[in-house]
Amino acid sequence: MNQGILALVTSTGCAAANALQSLTDAMHIPHLFIQRNGEGTPRTACHLNPSPDGESYTLAARPPVRLNDVMLNLVTELRWQKFIVFYDADYDIRGLQTFLDQASRQGLDVSLQTVDHNVSRVFTNLFSTMRTEELNRYRDTLRRAVLLMSPRGAQVFIHQAVETNLASKDSHWVYANEEVSDTEIMELVHSSLGRMTVIRQIFPLWRDSNIRCMRNNHRISSLLCDPQEGYLQSLEASNLYLYDSVLMLANAFYSKLEDRKWHSMASLNCMRKSTKPWNGGWSMLDTIQKRRITGLTGMMDFRVEGSNSHVQFEILGTSYSETFGKDVKRLATWDSIRGLNGSLKESRIENSMQGVTVKVVTLLEEPFVMVAENILGQPKRYKGFSIDVLDALAKLLGFKYDIYQVADGKYGSPTINGSWNGMIGELISKRADMAVSAITITPERESVVDFSKRYLDYSVGILMRKSEEKINIFSLLAPFDLAVWACIAAAIPVVGVMIFILRRVQSVRSQTPPAGHQVASVFTSLQSAIWIVYGAFVQQGGDSILGSVALRIVMGSWWLFTLIVCSSYTANLAAYLTVSRMDNAVRTSTLGDSLVVTAADQ
Figure 1 (cartoon, helix red, strand yellow):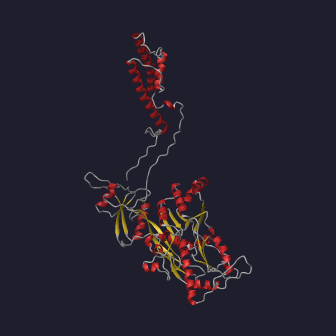
Figure 2 (cartoon, rainbow, N blue to C red):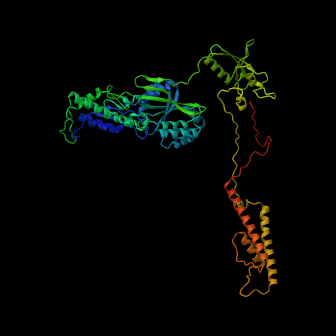
Figure 3 (cartoon, one colour):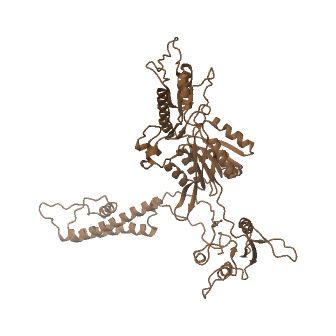
């Protein structure tokens, strides 16, 4: 400021902006403020201090937060009546006050819940503090949820909700954040279960390369003006607004030079009491407010209450296809002038069956198809879940239907001659146009008729008591049977006696040992021979000297036997201690001892 200042362009948080506003208002310095949100959490409105004399020199280069308006339009379009809003612990909840007031006027039931940085602790507390019926109500509320969180926090939160079975296939997540990349959106979509809708800010793209790279007599680098470079999409929104703010300031300065109304730059010192505000500050501020530029973020001007009001959002939604799986496509856009452009409602089937009468075959199966109370002389009437779906389709598409029961009372299976019976046979023979009942989808049936999407997955499970683990102090003997241990115990003395006899025979044949050799006395007694055999079995060796060929053959065979037995014992012991044995609790088919479950093919 001592060297001269033209204007102040900052990109900070709300707290720093309030301090800078006090300085710029006191010194009459134009201040272009770009709000920056930290750690990816959605930003909320900055409540700046009112100026003492009513002349504010701070201009909001980044548009005010409009997520509240977009979210209100979205929940109204989706016809939500009850939903919950999850927000980060760092999120300023005061920014939702306008949204909550407008939702309350419309009679919407909105719940709020903060999400701690440790997401797993949130779900642990839910299961430890809530009862079963409370969890069921909470799970129903979670079917419609709005997330005001960082991309990483939202991904972890959704993953935990899916893992703890609090999210279902009919869940609908709305993630609102101005700055979220394509990669983060795909990670959110693939981690979610159900439908995902994303709200984020977008900037207009110029198709003409000449217009793209030339903005207000200013040439933009090709890295920023060429969409194929991909560099523009990787920049934060606050950096883009920072670029356009400097561009706006340069155009205002150029305009002042053309009009020859330039005042010298302010040389100010905050530490001196004699320092007076800049005389040309208000003139410079007025020039900036009257200018309008087209930058990287689109149109920028400050004609509405000292802030840039031009902002545009896109609303992305997930779709599912059999070939590509989950995919993300643009459903609608929202801007500050026209509001919502597009529809978020589910696509409706065209009414191309107006006035057509459809023959429908059915089979009684509670609670899908049941006979209703009939009036004497009137056609038989039906009720049930499948009948309700059929009535909704008839109302939607405009057709009428005649319904009858299949004669043989079967769902449909191939016969010996290759034809089909049951409802499938009625469809193949074209006696019926549609079959409505709780019929199982099988590959054989799919090869001859077309099925709708399944609406019920039926499975059978058996709940049994967990077997208790018993500690056995003799588990070291488990790898071998008792008979094997008995044979090993008997083999040791037998081999010892055999070696003792062979040594005695050798001693009788050679009464005098050769000169220079002293025969060891390890086999002189039966106990020593058995001890040597036992030492070889436990792989401890010995100091025996085997002189004859017979002794060497016997001991070599014993060593080989010992090696095989010890290796087998070691392998079986490791498998026994590491692999848990499955205890089959259901051993008989009697009614008193087990539960027998059968499922009939439908």
